[in-house]
Image 1: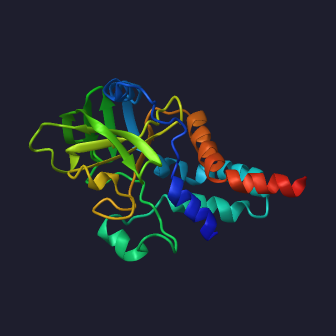
Image 2: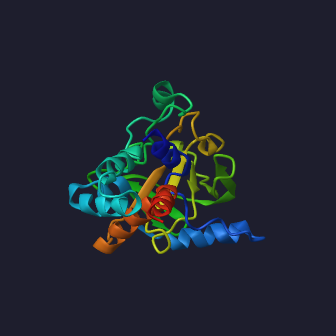
Image 3: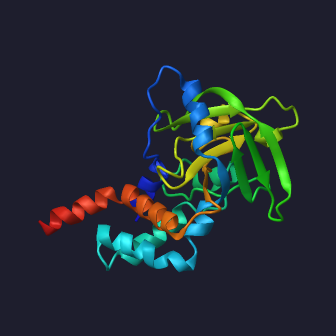
Length: 239
């Protein structure tokens, strides 16, 4: 089971669409903002709901068999549903080599994010605005030294605080059925995986106006990417 969790922690949702190797990253970053327009809920608060348990089980059974499916499904669901990040997570998990949970929820009082072109806003649990700023492309960014590449955006608003920078990975609702991002006041710290104030945290969102198919698709993708090696092993044994 530790091997499964290690794979998840090293790849998270693993962006299926890599950053394009173009000569104009600013144009690609602007296109990404257009492609993620919408209002987003926390991904794992949605997918981990009891009503989707069978979807998890079916996908895990396809990769590892019926007997192992419940255990693996639970591991997958909990691996990205941690409640610790930053120094608290470092104190609990160290470098992660002995196991860890990733916190993929929204932080700093935000319950929903709204992406509207260059404007990014956050709403609290009552629908009240927590922040709203305009952002421009700052530079290309990378989490875990090249494993997860994306784009860093910055606002010029002096009161932005922990919403000064946004680091978006290239996932979109139309490609991977979800988005992944980080935000904070320290651009360099946002690129660190298991150290600093954002250690073991990567926000994941799914459209608030999603349909059931989108939820099923993102669960299937998550299982497919994180259990690919196990599925290959099962196929080899069957052969």
